[in-house]
Amino acid sequence: MGALLLSSLGNGLCFPFTSIYVSQLLGLGGRAAGGYFIAMAAASFAAALVGGPLADR
Image (cartoon, rainbow, N blue to C red; front, top):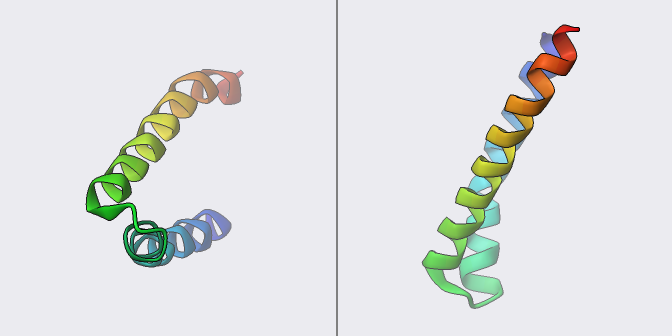
């Protein structure tokens, strides 16, 4: 659980920098940064749906 906590904390700290990178440095704007986070959330949700039952076996 401690490793999961550290992993989640690290991911959370990267989000602001990722959005700045996508919107400012790549020049794609805020919409692209939002789309990136939506895609990440959808992939995480799908992985949880598929991986959850597999982990319980």
